[in-house]
Image (cartoon, rainbow, N blue to C red; front, side, top):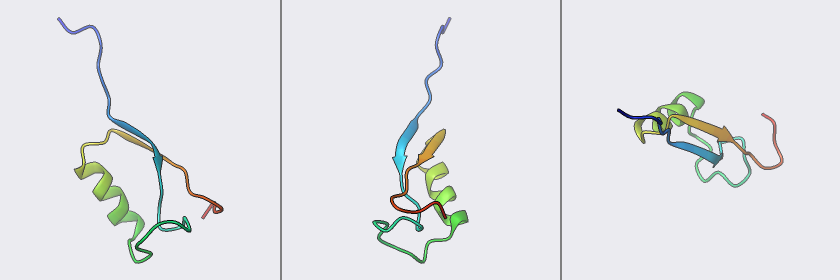
Length: 52
């Protein structure tokens, strides 16, 4: 019997709103789809110099 459940979480991701994101043409929907397809259960957005 399993006593713990493990989740894959990335605590440092960027969106196209971040100045360091390489492809500004990526839509929010595409960004989220990519995260889901990679098997991540949760992400933390850590954009630099932007709250967009």
